[in-house]
Amino acid sequence: MEDTFAFIIHPIDPQRDVSRKYPALGKLPVWLIDFLSLFFPPVYISEIQNIQSAANGRSLHGWFVACPLTPTRMMSLPPKVVYKKIIQTGRLAEKLGANILGLGAFTSVVGDGGLTVASQLQIPVTTGDSYTIAVAVQAIQKAAQIMDIPLQTATVAIVGATGAIGSVCGQMLAPHVNEVLLIGRRQDKLSQVAELVRQAGCPHVTISDDMADLTKAHMIITVTSAIDTIIEPGHLRQGAVVCDVARPRDVSVQVASQRPDVLVIEGGMVEIPGPVEFNFNFGFPPKMAYACMAETMALALERRYESFTLGKDIQLSQVQTIDKIAKRHGFKLGGFRSFEKAVTDTEIARIKKNNQTLQRPSNHQQSKGDQPVIDPVIQ
Figure 1 (cartoon, rainbow, N blue to C red):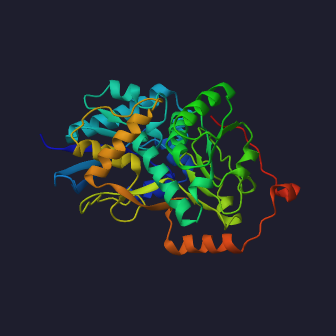
Figure 2: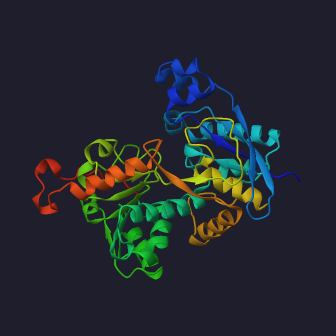
Figure 3: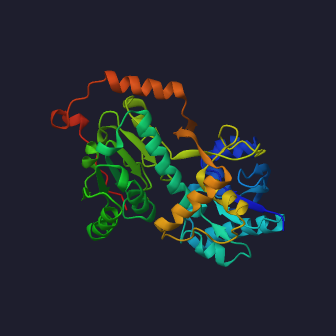
């Protein structure tokens, strides 16, 4: 049996992303692209070639296929309508010969996290969330190291800690940091996650539903289901590192312009083993992919054709397993992205310099204008 996979993408920024395949359509107004997206069929995007395992030299190829729905449409249409369009896209992947299907961006989080989609297809389905967690944790640890934040004395905050991704991130970081701050709305669920984090190796665990407490954190992983941004410039301490795993993003673009001392990353880019050719520009440097894409590829190289990550419940053991599989085949952290662009070494050096020279007032000395903007739309 030939080792193959497919991965579903869809337009996140309607004009920009549609233009990558259909330049003329990308010139339409956003509202019209949103409207028309319901009526477009699934789209074949490209063949992915020359992925090669570092463990055994096995080669792999696959395909990008696109579900035409925009985020606005996915969030506003009835779930049955959205499921139908994703399932149609999955059937295109089956016709192409894929042995496993990965769900990208909103197709992995809408509704029940892939369970309904998987039940209607003949091939296994994975959301990629397990490897996304592993890479996010690796990325924030690497970013902290670059920003000279010693992990053993650091406080890490998890925003959206009651969700599956937030909970596992907290457990994975627990043995490496001094304190874990869990932020969410449900106190009972936060207490349960706090106990898991303590068991994972961090005795200092606190819970909160107040975004103002983020000023205590040296490192932040944020992964909520909020529709709008919830982390503003005033929420962050000097020199903080923020890993925004949420889609849509949790961190306001104002942080980039108003906090030049803060490093914001969107998880990590994964370097794919072998001279891979995606034959489509999805905005990443050569050889780099999203972690969710990489999970699908790694499972195919391992010949684990199973629905590895589905639904809203993710276990620490799943994350550890896919991390080992990916490392064995040669997948590795390949750099950072921030607000849809790769972060260069020059930019990181500038942020470090700003952190060293900028004197922010302490939390007690902040003016009213600097006080955190609280928006409690968190998991």
